[in-house]
Length: 280
Image (tube, rainbow, N blue to C red):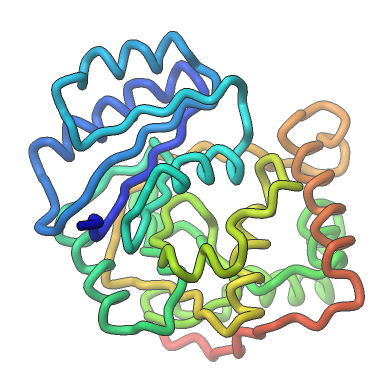
């Protein structure tokens, strides 16, 4: 009999080792009240992978998968998915603190709403600020505004405000165009129908693309504020146009964006999140 949930934890860098270790220890002490397994995937970090595997060798519900190299976000997580037979899988960055009741609430919500394909909780930074984890689907102009001086021009700043969905109440459960892939619960049957993560992206735009493919098939993407988790987040690709020449992560983001816009050129956006008046 297959499990209800697979928790997939992908890590790459040495500093993520302690995050992964703490997550696994937390799960051991706070097992969800449903059938589950944990799949730890290392993107080529054999040293830390071997250490984790040795420390948790007695835990049969934890699978350890070592990739030969850094496959990036989409491909790396897909390896984890391919080793899962569960109804749902949770993709999570290792720098997120889980809460048992909230995790169970997400699965229950998906059980009650069969038309939802991807469910994203509210993520909160250490200082209490709510993270922006949802967006409208971007246009090339939106991408340029966010990365250049244009965001300081009143006309363009208003457009950026709408793209980032700052017109939406962050405390409301709602359908959204796409969600950041830091922590998402995905219905496996729908994931298989869309073909999984698009392998053309190394890191950025993988989550945007996956949500777009879900909406193309009328599978809903929902921001679920009844579940809240802490995110010890460090932004990778921030910076303006000058940073393009000095910051590797930003260059990867730009290349991924070019691939995304080329893939969907001349194609209609499948879902437009309605604008809302702020209610707070």
